[in-house]
Length: 313
Image (tube, rainbow, N blue to C red; front, side):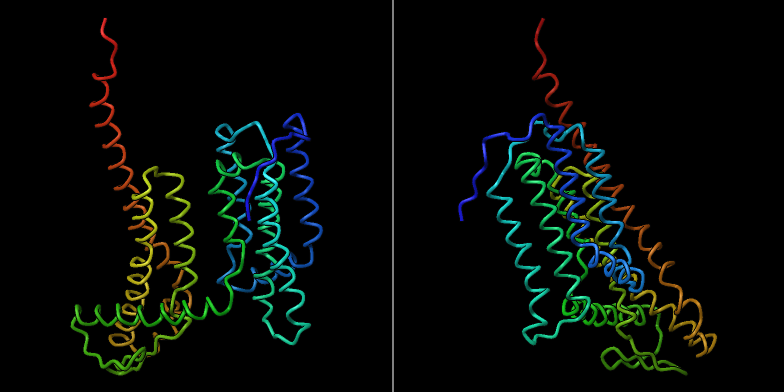
């Protein structure tokens, strides 16, 4: 498929295109009102998806702070609009017609398809009313909307299992470092006086997912170098696993040295937010280190290029 850009400008001045863009979004919200309500209920009852309705607010904020940098001349990119519109139509068709064809899909997967379709149609509006250049300049805020889509059940299940096993490996290493006697059988640890199993609920997938989203947002706001942004985002995986392993270690040591009843303590049941905040400390330290290196490099470049670019009197 060849993507072309329309050269005519049917909605002029640019203010008319902005109004059309906002009206189109309002129409989308009305058309998807039922799935949006169901999505709201999912977000309020699911820890994994509780962040969903913050995503559009973050996107709006990013577009607002970047408004001076975004192009003010709009030319419709009908080819790109058609492409993302087709993706939205396919996702909507799958959500509506798969159950009618005998394919059972969960409520979460249905909402994943509908939310993905909605994000596609929002991007369609961007290409249609704002154009390719505007969408390219606003690529990160518009792409950030993908986190509005709930994680499909199969993906969430796979990540939970992978995180559970990896966290158990990290916890086992912590037990060895602290000299804690332990026998391990996969995710099961036999400790003095208690046996602990690392379950899916202990995988920390929600906090790791939020940490990943946070790192992407921080890399966009605070860093400019692509490789520094990559380092920051890649650091989330080991940070998440270290946090999970450390949490397992703390709970296990409490059970060993205080009593098995500590498995039902607040540290285990409601300690997740504390360990999540603790994992933000090294993340912010990495951001500070990367920003400092970026500032030093920029200063060195300015000092090196300054004399060469100076105009002799």
